[in-house]
Image (cartoon, rainbow, N blue to C red; front, side, top):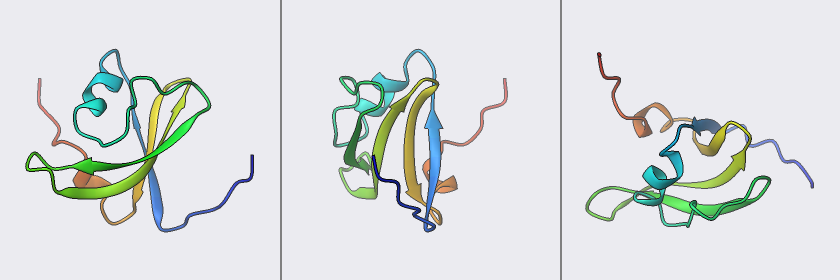
Length: 83
């Protein structure tokens, strides 16, 4: 598979038992059926349905990788919770 360097993108990894179900509820592509080694194009949605960012979701061994625009990467993550 050809590789392209996208210097204006960052990679976010979402992992855990509920990662696919969580993402499936906030993105436009079906990540619940995404197989290892496959990728899909989609968009992250705000609760109102507004597109916040576009991305390629890929499933790896450790979770789902979601490349995001570098300027938006931190903004797309939920705030850290203190336990």
